[in-house]
Length: 193
Image (cartoon, rainbow, N blue to C red; front, top):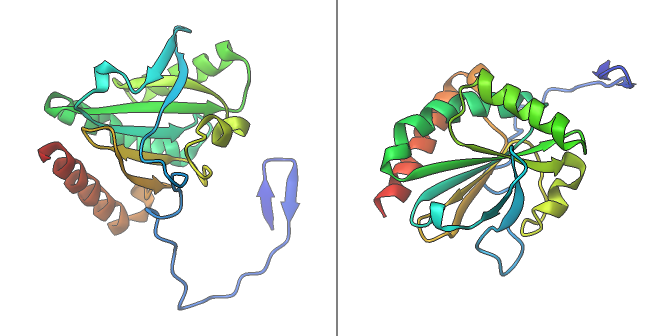
C-alpha cells in the first residue's frame, strides 16, 4: 500500500525488472528552446527584491538550488552544498537557494526557510521564491520543473551549462560518492575556465 500523508492511499504491485535504467538526471529538466541564461526576481528573506543576474554574481560560477524546506532530498542537497560553498566561495563559487514553499504567506515561508538555514548552517543566499505550485511559472525559462531539488549550473559568463534534477543523497552509498566527485570535478572545471 502506498500512503501519501493522511490524504491518499493506493494499492500497488511491483514486478522486478532487471533491465531498468534510471533517466539521466542531467537531461530531465531543460531550458526552453532559444534560452541559455536564467533570470528572476524573488524576495530576500528581509522582503527586499533580489534580481538575477546582477553584478554581485558577475564572473562567478553560480549554482541555483531549486528547493523547498518540505523536501527531504533538498535537505540532503543543502547538507552537501553548505560546506561545499564554504570551501569554494573564495575561488569565485556562489550558490543561491530558490526556496519554493507550500504557502503563499511570506512570513511563514521565511520562518521555514530560516529554520533550514540554521539547521544546515547555510551561508549562501536563500530566497523566498513563492508557492511551489507556481514554481514552473516563476522559472519560465525552464520547460518545466520536473522534481525537487533541481540544480542549475551557471558559468562565469552567465550561461547555463547543466541542469541536474534530483539529488543522489547519502543513503545511495557509492552513487552519492560518485555524485560528490562529479559535482566537484564539474565545478572545478567551470572555475578554471
